[in-house]
Length: 335
Image 1: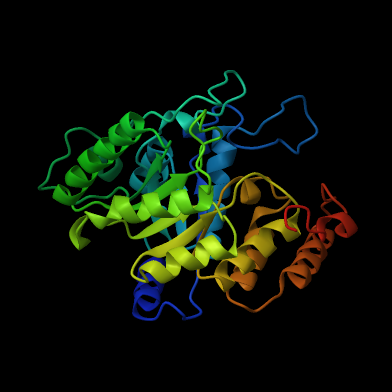
Image 2 (image 1 turned 90 degrees about the vertical axis):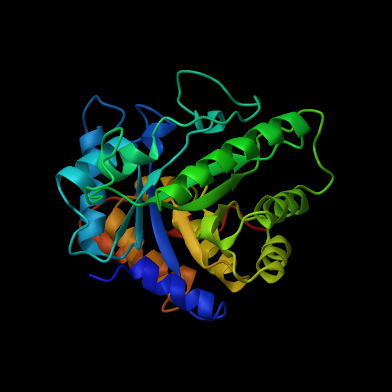
């Protein structure tokens, strides 16, 4: 079956102003958050968090529903769902795997790496992602994922940034050799220490442009995943090079209206991909949340009306929402 991601990406590259929009569910949290990664346990028992199997069942449900274009996972989850279960065969959803896990995504509750500089690191190899083992046999078909997320954080420190860029270069060379596709995530650090740029959004945009300036088409990321830094920064990046498709990450949880509005505003300023993780995972009903997120992405619903219809779904499912409609329809993260 034709994957919706590939089809939409081709249309976006042919016409950056088209209405196509790619939605990814980022369920790779076990590579950063540890035990809390599957999200809060809404069941009335003594356990605070869901299990990894419950986390994976939500992925199965979302893939079968088909409103997402990409499912981003850890290598171990992809081995189970992509290689062993063949979940994605016969669906329009593309499996993807977090290909590196830099130290700034180590966000579990049992330690504190915040404020420390980002250091490059990779647990998974491309062979493990593509085949489930190392070394992979080049004569065997790759039944695993063939799309990965690589993340980098620029620290405005020459030595640290050189180290991160060198690690990214080595990954790109290996990826090109193994015909492994990737997209690039660029974070804003929690702290630059005493080297905070005067204009952080411009600094991030400039770093992205410089980072990709020396990369030829054969090794370029298919799209970007970055924080939404406002209309001006998004427009500047999208206008600079229309062949670089820009996507936004969802960040921490807020109201449902915050999530829907973030997607709508980013799209209106040039973004063509959203990668929401915790916002989807912490929803009262993930399938309904993504259904209305898709409606907003496709321009079929305004954010506020989508929130109302989402709450109508919750009522029909007899689910008591974490926030009542009058609270959930408010914007709390935008001026």
